Image 1 (spheres, rainbow, N blue to C red):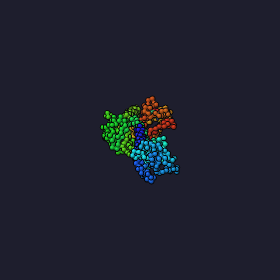
Image 2: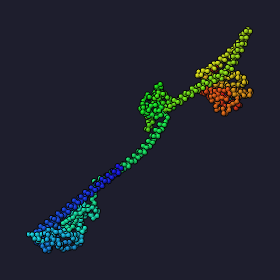
Image 3: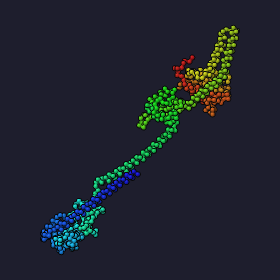
Image 4: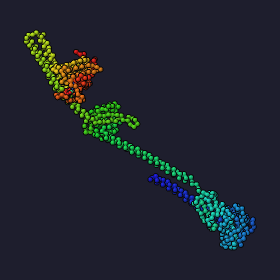
Length: 638
Ligand code: ADP
């Protein structure tokens, strides 16, 4: 709109300037033509006076008349011929006597207008004749000036004007430069013209009546195409150029604005997308500058700690969300991160909500790199792991409870077999002691009594061992790692089942390497071995008596002690194999399903592995793999 107004204004200005120019030219034309008319009239009036003032003596002879005529012609009067008519109208003198046409090469006689003569004589005033053609190319008219002496008209002086000569004499050069000036008769016919060039004139002419001398003569002036003044041309041109420049700058501006708008829209879309993304994140994000001042927090972070972004941004340590009881740790970690030494794998920290509740968070810190690629701070992502930690803790407690239950169950189981086992040494002690007492009573030499007493002592020690084992099993968490001789533990575990082995007629094959020393809890390891051996023995319940064979092989290789317990039992069905180590999984009516679960956790606690496979000869092979203690650490075997 403003642009249209501007262009309209420029056009109006140009038009007004052009109009003012034209008006000025027209005003100049009018004043020039009026001046010309005045000038001509002045010439004619002066000539009238000069003609009327003729001395009659000057008409007396041709010579004097000629000198009078020449004097008049010399005034640039426009007169071309003088004729002296007497009172009767007879031409008495004429100069020049004849008139020559320059074009036609003809000569004409003097023949002034009779009508004008009569009128002048009767009126006693100068009278002009109408214009008449002079040969073919010119026109002329006459002025008849009556000359009176003592109140009587004695003659008439006739001055002949030639239109072309008048124009030549009275139109100055500067006027002729500007206009084509013509004298036009009353019929509209052009009688004479003073013109530099014929064509290239404008049509906006001006004319003034040239009366009374001519009979309806008018002066007509038409201006040439005057070149417009340079200043005006320059002004118009600069206005047009200015308008074009404004147009061009508007166009550039519009293009720029459109581009800017597009970029802004794109930015807004991107910002909205990022904001939506940020708002929907569950992970808290927080950026700090290199001085540790908070420069950004996302809504999830604010929800997590309970402080608003406005309250947090610009804060420096200690932060309001640092937990009071962990201030030192938190500050130390803060300093580590700012020094670029924060743990890459992330770290856990305790923070405080605004309500005072303490939460656990997992934090990952990464360098904040700005658009110029400079390291400008640290960006931290924060996940609330309070729930997870709580669940983990509960699971751990559950596991502890389960393990303790398992220990109790296993202990119960073992107690029954140990009670069974204790029967034997106690019965043996009892019979050895009874025997020894009888021998002593019968005065038998001491040498014969001593072996019986030694055997009783040995049985009592074994019973004591069993009791200690039960005692240590019943007190969880008291495990102490020491160097354990695995072969010894296998034998000890087997010895707990001596009675059952004998009772079931199981043939036991042992191949135990004495070098298999591992680091661990001897009681737990023995308990695990006991469980495996007991399962192997129980699996051969229905095996034919001659095939009831239990082989235990202990070897050392590649830094590991490898124990294989091979039975010829009912084996493990494929559908059961996957659940074997699950706690409480059992296929036995009286089973607890804890044995293998305990075994595996014990073995794995000793950085070992427990596995099984089918025995090609029927039955199962259980493998225990435990890392060996390097030989130089192992104490010498006694
Ligand atoms: P339980 O002996 O109380 O059933 P375990 O965890 O010791 O509990 O054993 C789980 C199950 O694994 C047993 O019920 C049994 O089916 C199977 N199993 C364990 N050892 C053997 C083995 N040597 N031969 C065959 N099956 C076995």
